Amino acid sequence: MHQARIRCIKKSYQLAVPYTTRPKRVNETSGTDYNFVTVEQLKAFEANGQVIEKRQYLTTKGIWYYFTLKFDVSDDKDYILITTLDGAHGIMEHYGSDMVHIVYLIVDDKTRLLRCIERESKQLNPDYQEVCRRFIADQKDFRESKIKSFKNVHYIDTSCDIENCLQKWQQIYNS
Image (spheres, helix red, strand yellow):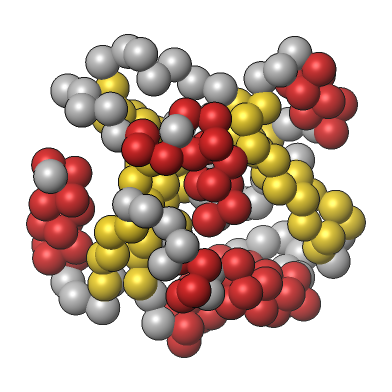
C-alpha cells in the first residue's frame, strides 16, 4: 500500500477514496476501497473538470483507469489518499508540492507478492497472470530513484510489529 497525505495543518483527517474503472473484487466495497465507475462516468467527470490526476493500465483484462477527483482542502481536515507516485505527482501539480506528503510503506517483495496471490485466490476467477503483471509494473513504478525525486517523503518499514508502524505514523502525522 502506498499513501500520499495532503497536509494543511488541520485538526483531523479522512480518507479520500480514489476512483477506478476496473471491476470490483470480492470483499471490496464501493465508496470505501475505491469508487467503482464506468468509462462513461470517467468521461463525464473529465468533461466537468473534476479529474485532477488519471492513470491507465493495460491489464490482462483490458485497459483500466484509476483517478482522483478534486476535493476541498479548505475545510478542517487532512486527506489521506492511497495512490501511486504518478498519482501523487498529479495531486502535487493541482494542490502544490508543499501540500502533499508521501508516506511510503516498505514491504519486502516476498510478503507483497504472497499477499497479492492470497487476495487473488479469493476471487471468483483468479487471474495470476495479472498479479504477475502488476507486481512487475510496481517494481518500475515505485523504484527508489523515483521515490527520492519527491520533496516530502516519509518511510514506514512494515517489517516491525503493527504498534511500531502506528507509532511511526503518528510521528509523521504530528510533525
